[in-house]
Length: 562
Image (tube, rainbow, N blue to C red; front, side, top):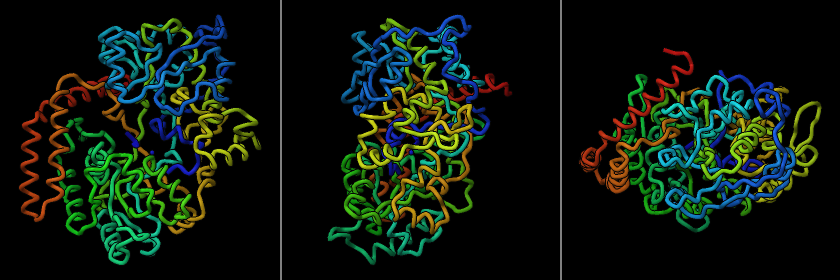
């Protein structure tokens, strides 16, 4: 949830990792003409009100500060201040409690899978008329994809972010991580497959069974107890070179099947089993939670794993602070087979994840649309991405550059951006790294030049050995897909069966990976497949197949395709 969804070496882009990585595609036109002076009324008859108003919104991150410099500047230009209601604990549970009590905020931030129950209850309002009246920049930003915002009933309930990115964002990285020192000792080899990496890890492990007096961990994960899909399912389709459709595979005829029943899943289980039989798999692979996995990665004993850059941010920060820069991780692209076509680096027209919804409790729905309309202007994009000119960035030779003093402060203190810079719920509406504004300059500071300037000497040395400027250059060329299936509203049919399927997956996976012989592996795999089918996998696949094909029909109609 890419990410993919997303290593951060500067706190300037903390928020870009906390939110879904925002990007777009080659066919998408630049957001030209979206100036901050565009009328919010749509017909040019009146300017938006600047009368101060406070609007409640649930915060998707506890670090957001309601009155940092950028939030205050946006308030000056729009009159709107966001009243953050922080959600502690499970968001889904909180959304259900709000819905039951009717005391949800004016703006409800939630994933598409949650919104169906709010629509059914009449808790969120249709937005298309408000956008027609007050949102010209919203319509321009989505352009030819605007009709994709519509729900099956023809109304627009959600405000996602447009993907206007035209290139792979500079901070994107492949999910397979290998410690710098492992690559250095191996002579900086070109590694294309998991089996090639296995051989390199095995050689290093045999030579270095301990690191800093503690057992070396050749392969670890991001917390199998919390997220078995991150440790088991995602790596399977990534090694197959396929787009991130989470639990599902989608073929060229748009048929949807569960990845966890595929040959790719079996093959990745076999790879983990190979690690286990050679005493190279983290002994807590299936039992540690996310926080424990993060702390373990910061010890410097982990050699490799499917460890995305967003997970490694704080561990690598700790490693550098400990003087262990050589224990950081290079994120590279790996496949099952070297000649497999790699289509894993994908972008979508719309970033639909933590979408905004205007609830029926809103006293000022028009002001909310006007607020978002400002954010999607060039003026708004400069503020939410770059910050304030002269403080967060400067203009040099007609181009925006990060202010040197600001850069130093954010590098020294990862929390500094939240208190003093472009950070807050408004950031959701960024065009994305790699997108450009109407002046031809980048919409965000996250360029290859900037990103490379944040690297330490150890990282620069490693990248130079591979003739790369940034880690994103290890990835295949970016490709456009109509959507990722996890962006779509979760179908009600098959919901209970899906939970049972996931429970079987979590329960049976360790048995398969811990098989002692090939024969035992086959037996455990076959038993697992039968259990998944009994849990209702066919109903799950049918529900998501219907969902996806319905979306593709809408997409083709919107794009004028057959």
